[in-house]
Image (cartoon, rainbow, N blue to C red):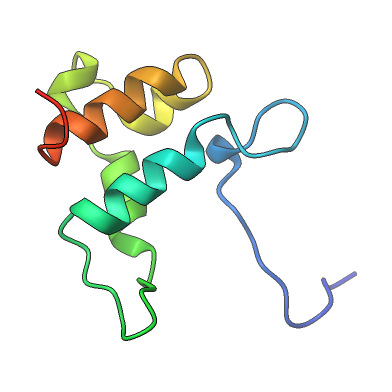
Length: 90
């Protein structure tokens, strides 16, 4: 059966075992959107693709792991990596 239209699909890596967004995901996305290189539209929205690319790219601040790999087990480390990368925390 096809999903109702319109519908949204979310990457599974951003959801915990309970099906809810991983803790601190909102804070991480806020850092990426407010301080990252992703160009928002006139309403402050981005396409989301830049943020997804960041989550799926190896990150030296996470010992070479991708943020997506670390998000479920240590969301605080992913938030810290985003803050450091975008110069919000030294």
